[in-house]
Image (cartoon, rainbow, N blue to C red; front, side, top):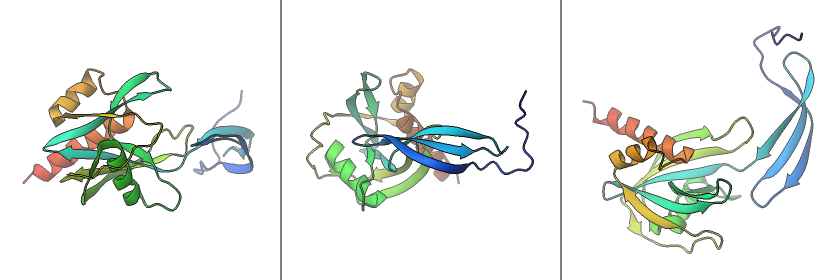
Length: 189
């Protein structure tokens, strides 16, 4: 029986070779040969995906959500606007572009909320989340493969939608809970 006990506290894995198995439109699938911390060799399969942004838009004291059909789960999801950061674009530029494309609004009052790896077990994607306040109409044409409706919910309605399973999207759940935490912290004297 092999032991996973380490000779030190170094958990880093060293890449020996790296190869792209598939290049898609938005992501690529890779397999790397690695040396584990215990000296054994093995493989790591993962998806390379660019960093992305997510936006929690506040419109008249309510959260502005989008509804869209998501092919992988095969259903319509209620979520916050989001999108990948295009090459040469800053996260803030992406926030404003995605907000305009997906909701028809823009904001000059954008506040950073948090960043996190969405699925670190198999993806490189890191999502940078912002709150957008003081929205004003500024529509941009949506991407040709996006069909979106909007809906607003209060924070308490959004939390109830999480509890009842109406909101299942992880970036949306995380943004709502982080926003609620921030709002409570700011309200304390």
